[in-house]
Length: 536
Ligand SMILES: Cc1cc2nc3c(=O)[nH]c(=O)nc-3n(C[C@H](O)[C@H](O)[C@H](O)COP(=O)(O)OP(=O)(O)OC[C@H]3O[C@@H](n4cnc5c(N)ncnc54)[C@H](O)[C@@H]3O)c2cc1C
Image (cartoon, helix red, strand yellow):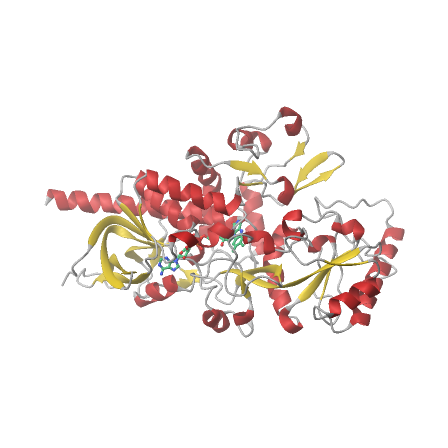
């Protein structure tokens, strides 16, 4: 028997982050009556998206392609000509994006999902720009000033102006202007299935939500789009899927993403996909809160200055090659390496030469607890109060590293240090080779004052999600491998794109690309169904 519904919509979206709002607004722009239900109260809006830097990765054809969508930092359109002339940006082609996904995700990413993401990436950015979203060049994040020129690196060069906070504000405003009804503090609790559809998997025809303790049932003619994030905010699910110790990682963003979408979809036999033991995790300020991000600081707890220095654990031992690749391609895996260290903490260390390149956003004194000292011995003494338990080893490791750096420099005096590219300045020469190399940007750590910051592991989002049909974002059934009518998954909940690692900036792009695909498809289904009903 058909349940009694409290309200009826064409499309219902679960989750108010970038993916959910991209889906909801697109569906509304296609003429659908849309509801978006969000578990968090309005005062905690935006999901993980709120905490982001607003950085999107997409294909573009050099600076000329970007100029029409770029704004200055004050929000006015365009860039001054004298600045344009000092910028070095190389195009980021579809082949580049594919190669990055393949390399970074160890050739495991679902090729069809990757193709849809890459092909749709530039159009997604244009849709945002066409709807009033503003883009700016990431001078501080993705460029270094070398010889008076701004050299951009890492394939990802722009961000939404104002970062995640502004992105969420823009999304909410645009959704409202397009007529999307937003229900804050309204968690989705289960999917409603039409058992009499004759379809083996049952069609999803609506959603049950909790509204201030009351159970409400919403009908969805075109479908329910799940955009309610990963399970990163559930310590129990983290320990279960990611492994022992993961319950102790700090949650970087939204505390409401506890795997509700996985659970609800599991009950209608959705097929899972992707890297369930994998997640995005970064070097994160040890003084950050454990169970969810700070809405004031958001992304500033990230500590991504390690390519210009060293990382040592509390026993004074290095544990990763800090310069193995550009930061965009290592930052999402180094959190896991920190978690593995004793006490799940470590220290990032620089000398006076390295520390001048650190971004104030992450390392200013009002952002993080910098420990400073004139000598390495004094630095080790001070870090003992933050947990360093082998001071001598700490000093010895850095001195051994310095010797290796000097041997390399003696052998290759013509090589130029350049933070904007993999410069090959390393610790490995014919005279000395470290067991754990630093492969690029190997500056000696020898000129005081020295500085250090204590870090831990910050988990961003989980990679395991639901299998979708790449062309529609419809969730696939585990029973017959066919799309489940009326059920979609987008954003962090979409599984199969990322394995082990992740090319920085792809999360927001994927959310917009697949969110828009799902929104358009569900709106189309609603149109067909309601016009059929009208003709009966
Ligand atoms: C600090 C930080 C910085 C980041 N920086 C970037 C960046 O610059 N670029 C990038 O590409 N990615 C970045 N990311 C990754 C980011 O997580 C994703 O790219 C993207 O924001 C995820 O969007 P989403 O819509 O899938 O999820 P979210 O934005 O997390 O939205 C999911 C929403 O679902 C809600 N929800 C959960 N359960 C329910 C339920 N039962 N009912 C209703 N609602 C529910 C949640 O409350 C949340 O609001 C960053 C993440 C963090 C934490």
